[in-house]
Length: 153
Image (tube, helix red, strand yellow):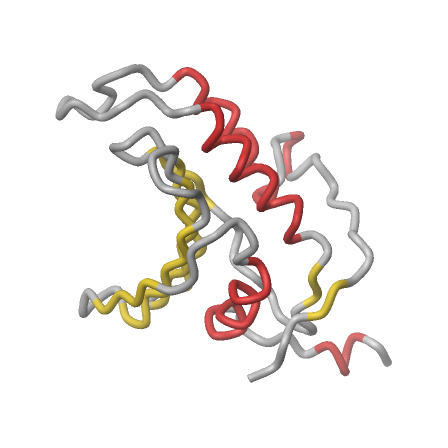
């Protein structure tokens, strides 16, 4: 398994097609909107999203910019509130899924890898804010390789 290595942060064009927010940046729009999630948002007593969980998710995403997974395309992240007032960041490349949960009750940064979402296989992995190195080891499993050699000719 290859190990991710820190790299220089790269810039991302914020304007996608038709002037909309580019898919990689959409997660930040979702996270900003979570400041407005009310109590009982799901109709089952779900807690309002804790600002500390949102801040931890944003910090984790910014931390990811320093890593290089080589010639692979990581799916764009999605963000979702959790019932406990936390935030879940989700990267999906069916049938695989990689999640990082930021929960205000427990120390944020629980990392989960779903080997096959069709079978409900889930593996709880690292816990802690510095889950980025382990995240990138697993990201190579869900990020399809690109043909970078042909683009360098």
